Image (tube, rainbow, N blue to C red; front, side):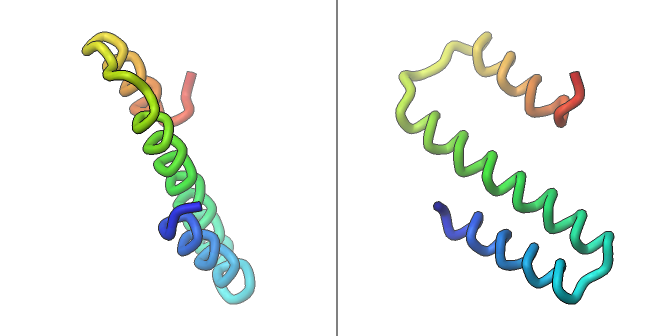
Length: 68
């Protein structure tokens, strides 16, 4: 687990204990983003180079922000 994920997890815990509902929502979003970044970094490091078309398709998924 990356330092960024650990930090985001700690911030979520603090927000859950002392923050507002908006703080918790923000912290959850930040933790999800940190986990995604950590996962993508690991997968990209292990994969062979992608073609430009493959990178574009993957980038489109990320840009959609979960919308389908």
